[in-house]
Picture 1: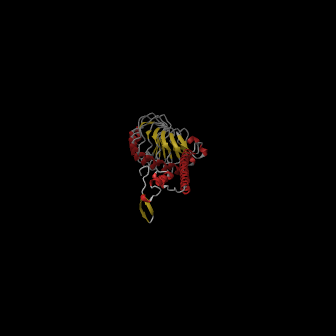
Picture 2: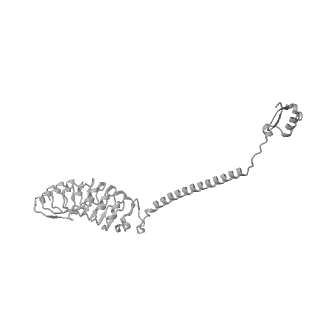
Picture 3: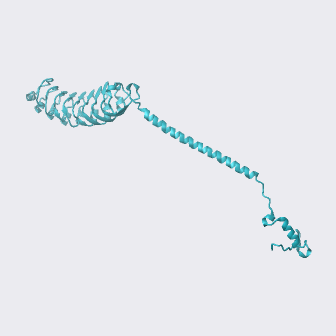
Length: 321
């Protein structure tokens, strides 16, 4: 394979499904006219050489189903006209580099059945021509990037058998061209997108807590818990308001009747007659007899004055008054 790098006019190298056991020679980067590289299903070992980034005319790279190790060289992000990139069924690890976001012409990306970790890069959402994305059977974590919902050309998506969590982005509702999808065997939750690609139960089974208001999905309704909680809260508010109004109304009624009763009592109660003798603290008849005796039956000798209102007598009462 080392000598192939010396073939400067080589445009297609297709040696798939053989028993080639070797590393990919860095010298292959010297075949600058190479447009198609197909080493699929061989027994390749070692790492992907970063020198492949010099193949500026490369539009197809099929390196899947081999035994490649290590990570994807970030330098491969320079392959700006690459359309098909297949690294499936290898032993690649580390994170998916962000540089593949430069593959603006890429239509198919297959990184399945490897050992990639960490999150799916947002930059994949910039591959505006991407039609097929396969990331299944890795160790990817975190949430599905909402930018994947911007891939309007996407027809096939497989992120199954990972450790993805959180909700499926609402931007997936815009993927009306999506025909096949598989998000099964993850830790996803929340509502399913309302598009036909999710009509198959196998596409989303074995997740944490997905829901759907579409009865054909055979999942619990998304709105049931929310509606029950809202109805319960509304019921409590209504009961409190009604109870407060009833209490206020009862208070007004009781206060009204008490006020009316008080008014009636005041109207019915007679005016008290003033008894001067009672005010003085004496019995009237007994006091009159004492006055007769004290004035000697109103004897003129006890008269001390006379005026327009009558005669005034001096009397010595037994009490000393």
